[in-house]
Image (cartoon, rainbow, N blue to C red; front, side):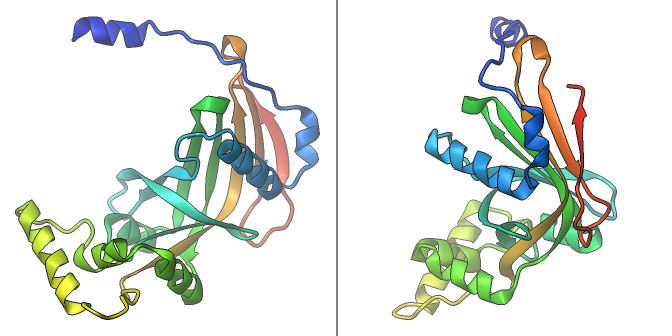
Length: 219
């Protein structure tokens, strides 16, 4: 074990996959986000739409987990989850969240901070309809984040849902749907040699503001 840990500790690989030119400061950050996202897809980065969502509820304890961004719209980023989950409870108590994308193949990351709100029902309905039937049944079977004694409890709930909706369409549960993150900060990070990374940050005072303040940051 120690040898394995030492190898990781002593791994000092460098970054040399590009740079952030100051001309990028003039681009709308959502347009730049879309460009980077498309490049991550075209370069076949692993799970290019996976992002780490961090929330903080009334307990003031940060909580993070990886989810998939499923929609990228003009207003922001959309992901889907159970409205009764730990993250949903946190967001109900404190709508300020952080999202992080990292694409190792490109030595890039995007950090987003913003305010979250429920996505319109029609978007949640459309996305739920696109899911495979087993995933639809899974959404009904799982009371996300609730404690269960055994794995078999979850599997039994799934079988109940299979029976309940046998020969029928599976509708979207009322406790499941989308969230929209409206960004107030979008930071683009490009790994550079000697750990002298590029960071360009776009910030605005609130979600209603149209003006972005753009700065370059030390790595």
